[in-house]
Amino acid sequence: MAHYLVTGGAGFIGSHLAEALVRRGDTVRVVDSLVTGKRQNLAHLPKVEFLHGDLADADVAREAVRNIDYVLHQAAIPSVPRSVEDPVTSNRANIDGTLNVLVAARDAKVKRLVYAASSSAPVLTDTTVQSVERSGNGFHVATDRGAWSASSVVVATGYCDLPVVPAATNVHSQAE
Image (cartoon, rainbow, N blue to C red; front, side):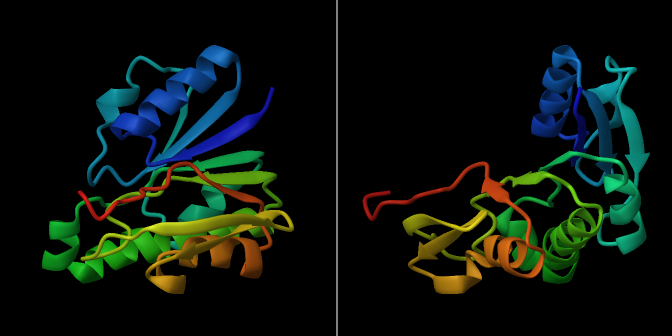
């Protein structure tokens, strides 16, 4: 039985991941600030350990990954318009929070981290993934926007030395 952390686990996708893991018989901890997630999304999952906190706080990130084997990183404040209206809050949640999770996971010797990529990640622009190549335990991602769009992969695999798997990649064509 593996021990999973689902960040943003009170959100729509995170709560469904938690449910699927519980059904498999895995141990699940969820961390969520409840800024966009809802505690009631987990009400039917009494076996899930819930940690209310902001991952932009490094202490919360460290507590969340304690004794965890795998992290499914879903936590984010989505929406390009919201990031334009309030870039500081979006940066704190999406960038600082992700970096804290990566560093805490590295220090806790987490086996693998899977993060969700979103159309909200490349702020104000569409990004086309040109290539994804395996590099050691991680990936090298080349995009038409360069390293900015691939920064989470670079930080995770380079600085934190974590095997990271992007859960989804948005590829946009010129026709869209």
